[in-house]
Amino acid sequence: MKTKQYTLDELNDAFIAGGGTGRKG
Image: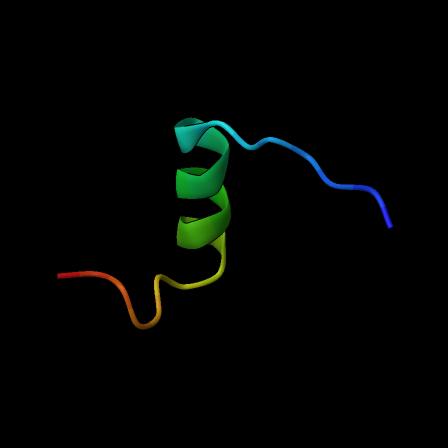
């Protein structure tokens, strides 16, 4: 199982693409 170091931009894009559930204030 490979791990990747995500940048904040990548995490942000993934978060927005995922609908922003749970963490958006």
